[in-house]
Image (cartoon, rainbow, N blue to C red; front, side, top):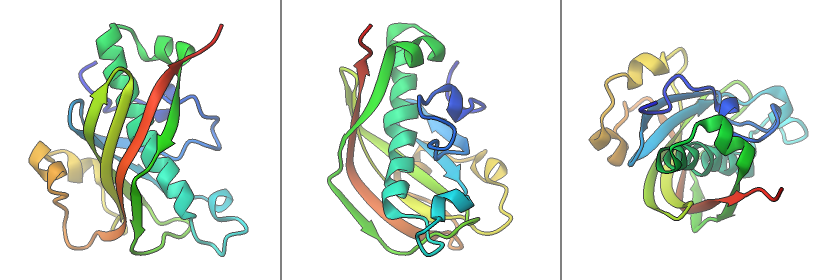
Length: 179
């Protein structure tokens, strides 16, 4: 496996199906970052005015980097597969430096998380990134098929993407499961 393209997030994350906040991985460069998408469902906005909560956006972003990217890097380092890692380690969220919300997301509005890895060592990872609302009916796989490392690092997107949030110092780690 050279990257996470084509991998179902449920095969990586230990979360139950109602708590996985990633639908698909669209772009991944192991030492750099990832682009994932999610479309909030009715259960995600229930009792919250039809708005997808900011804390869930942070969780989704953390799942992309602290869950998916960290799991991939550890599999490469330990020379194991995702099933072994998932059975023996749990990703935990350690903290966040700052989040600035610029807009809201509602049920059915697809968004992407663009996460850039800023630190990785000893099963610890730190990243920064942004969340954008996706233009309606955009084919994300086609759009990101020619995306580059430079594009990710510079957050290069068409003007019809809407900035939702900026996140910094999102930190997590993998802990070994107790037997």
